[in-house]
Length: 118
Image (cartoon, rainbow, N blue to C red; front, side):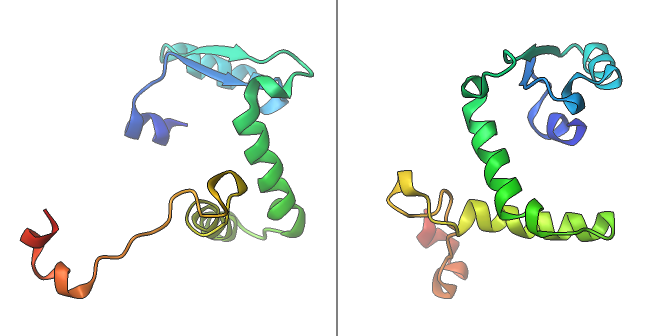
């Protein structure tokens, strides 16, 4: 969270479910100390946090349920590769089975002539 806040700024609120990792006293204390308020969804109401619930289910079903991580570094690499695939390769039904953020490539001819790109 700290890295995300450094890159994108400190939010006014963080909305989450009521899972133990999000209601931990240490986390709430840290967030309070930097001026972030917590907003929890109602228990048993995953539709209040639909994007996160959808991602969490996909992440669990497509990666976590099939992997055993033997080190933090291994987890970072495998999860990082999965996130790249999730964002740049995986077809998404709501987008006509195109990836959410396909990678783009600039032809070599144009790379050497940046004025043509503008």
